[in-house]
Image (cartoon, rainbow, N blue to C red; front, top):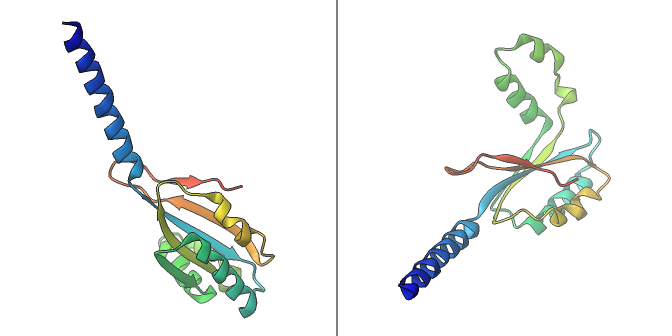
Amino acid sequence: MLVGGVAAIVGALVATAVTLAVTRTQPHEYVVSVFLQQDATDEQKAAVESALDALEPVERKFESREQAWENYRKLFKDRPDLLAAGSLEAMPESFRVTTKSRVFDCALLVDVRDLAVVDKIQVIQRPTEDEAGAEIACG
């Protein structure tokens, strides 16, 4: 009887460990948005793009001021108050990269954050079937 009880406990522990190991190894998808200051030069943009290589992106996109304004207008097409508050000149250019990993390492953003042309960085963990999305604080 004692042997059966111990075997049941060991079996439960092994099953729990396997479940944790499997779920923790599933990579998450993260979207990193790097918003640039209004006066960014081509050279500064290239430096940001190069620094983003540390994230090993699976997808990379640059959004011009014009593209940002068009997206803003589509997003708020039913909100004239917000449309009136925005303008092409107010839209920042940005880079968006998508990366995958089990846990996001904010240390990979140090070289990007140190560039004077970077205004803001936002990291979003995309939702999965089992988990809600979240903003990652990389202060």
